[in-house]
Image 1 (cartoon, rainbow, N blue to C red):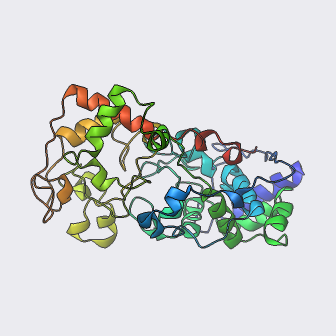
Image 2: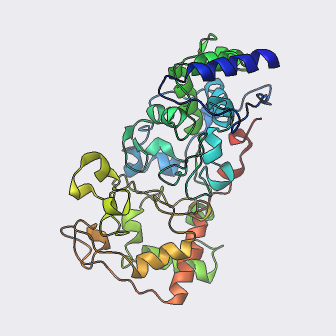
Image 3: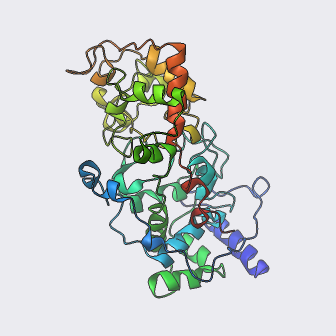
Length: 379
């Protein structure tokens, strides 16, 4: 098996030299042998995973539920997706997996400012955390992709990430002893295709449910476990004056709208125009996806470019340092409503308030998803 695999890898790598993805220098990236996944005899019941009734009955979330994909989650399908997610064999030189940039203990985010792919080049933006994607239809920082099953293949073929030719990937996986049976169980036969890879990955990622934080327990017990400092932070977050929950609202603490949040006067000139880089419209310059605040204490560094290393830096920015912008979101302006582009709002929080807000934000960190065996590395 080892000899056959090494020969196949060399042939595959050489054969891609004239395609979209350039070959990797073997002196820099050594070919590694595949590891073999250790899976339970009976698969985890992924199909039985569900959000709490309070989420399912929430009118706002009901509008977005299922937007991530219309693919049904099956136990065998998500099991296959789990193996694919953690398998570095999906990359050109077998060194990078999806999990390389989306680490479970970090709420499936990357602790580095920018992630390194097989080429050694760094990604343009900070890797986003992955969870509760049932409620997110448009993906990536610039919202360029619709649907999770479409999103999951992009990092695999991106030349600065996993750099794998999608046309060659099915045959490569077919050479690994563990995949034919996994595809058989998931889809009824051993055929491996990019569409089935996308389906399995989407099924697994849809199981990244995050609703088990201390904040959620607080909603049930009237926050009896919260410290005085955390209660002060909660009051600041929801008092209406800071407007924190106007942009990060509902049980998922997010918005489906992209905002210009005043990091720069001119985002394009600073190096990344966000949605504006796609549309060419000044109105979109610096408009980025609004992320959920769940697991915010686990997902540093922050912002699309990872410029802030700590939550305290983020709080200080929104308190004192929002920059003017022709289309600054009105919720970050003096009036808090009306047309965009007004003067930035200055909260001028006290030291006590800043520290309390940071402590409260940590209560959004999940206590189950980040350690769940069914979401862990099977290799």
